[in-house]
Image: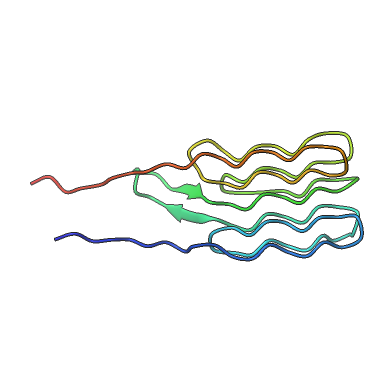
Length: 122
């Protein structure tokens, strides 16, 4: 018997406010709107799986870029940039979104995904 597990497929990113970019949507929770407006919104929460034997977060949204403070990210997402640095990349083998750039700063790349096959041996 084969059991297929279909996790959440993603949520919406948040809107930009003034100079602060909204956070990208994660697998289970949408990105957040910047507050205060000159900061980046946080990336949305991904999904946690214990298929590897330990809880691991996958598919977190990237943080929004802003002039003062880049938006935070969790579960593999990258942190948003400030006006003086680039956004960080999403985590390796997590499928997390890259942090957004601000102004001339570049965005981080999305993290690579991973395929985990689990089967029961008798």
